[in-house]
Image (tube, rainbow, N blue to C red):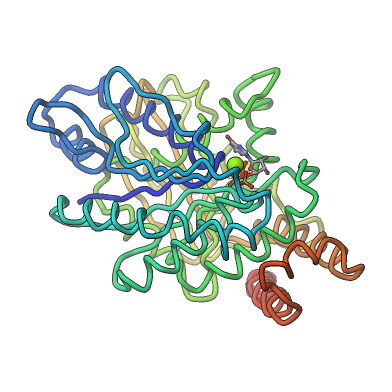
Length: 393
Ligand SMILES: Nc1nc2c(ncn2[C@@H]2O[C@H](COP(=O)(O)OP(=O)(O)OP(=O)(O)O)[C@@H](O)[C@H]2O)c(=O)[nH]1
Ligand SMILES: [Mg+2]
């Protein structure tokens, strides 16, 4: 089963670079031609007649400088990049204008990949919610893909900006992106730069955290979900969602400490605490559904799971085990959860957007491209509904 990855804008492309390096590392560390190796290879790469590896994923940007460089072991060929100066951190510019330059070539790439793939399990779209290309062009392309392939699974990985981020209109862009893609997504994996930064410092002991560190963590977490398992990842993720709750968060155990199976029990509890750390200040932690993915020899038994269940009390808990280790980690535990932890980030985006909107700040940048009051009102309504659905869990 293939996954077609589409990586948009600077953030998406930089993550793609890290993502494929990690896939390649994982493949190199595992013996060739076992089932895991073949499944992973077929999921992410085409192999040419001369045995060269070509990633199936598609790289999309309005600037070419962010596209990953050629690698000695594989080479990206699906590049849809026009050097047209970016999308000025403006969702509307990306969605209504720049997308026209990239849409047809992207759809053509997707069609060609589909012809080559025996079976497609899902699309994985990766982009930041707060720039202009990833958010605007990305939203437009996802919409068109959904029109053309309504029965495929759409998993979207959305990177939320630092709350004190450098883009003054980031909350508008995030609002417009989320409201546009929510109904056409089967699952949305939400990554928060703030939290990832915190985890790099506190769990991985990195002093001067860079985007490379954060992207490495994001790609580790994505691969801990997307590398071969005893189920299709698209099924795992869609089972965690319902129509009103599609925002998933991934937590993994501190990777540097995952050296031996004997640590696992305490790590399960520590992951649960990581979830608790997110507690809404005064609200009770509520979980709709959780999947626990264990990679490596360790396969938890009922008593190991008890602290985890006590902390999370999800309505449903799915457990998956893959005995082959991921990268060079003896064991790797990953939790994918659908909980009201997400309210904090959502609330802050909505509040920031509302504050700007109340004063009519920067609206002319959006009006220029046809985004008027009604469009914003609908976006606020949609995101309010999403937030309330989580508050009422
Ligand atoms: N995690 C992560 N976040 C990034 C990275 N690059 C940029 N960002 C965040 O993404 C947001 C800006 O989005 P970009 O991806 O740079 O924007 P874009 O999609 O290229 O859009 P334009 O540049 O406006 O055309 C900011 O909030 C950054 O903090 C990255 O490599 N990793
Ligand atoms: Mg850019």
